[in-house]
Length: 80
Image 1 (cartoon, rainbow, N blue to C red):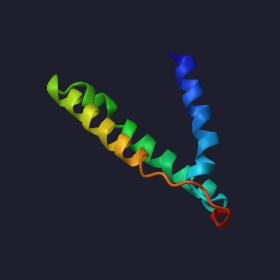
Image 2: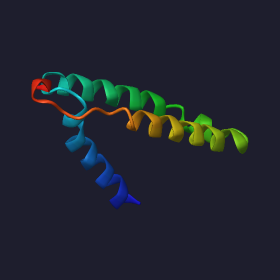
Image 3: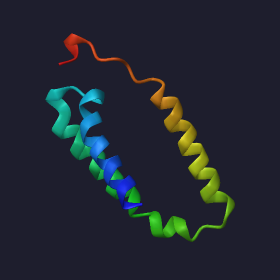
């Protein structure tokens, strides 16, 4: 479990430069961290919800992430 989490965070730092220009790298990393920490505040509350709601939420968020992943553009030289 921790090996997967550590690998995922390591990949996040390497892949971040592919998603955002170098000029905005630190700002976007900070903004993404703030949003992620704010969302994790609600994790204990969400854990107490009845069964079908967490499964439906997880499935819908996975579908949205898969759709957004198909919209990632390739880098061009003018990107930096």
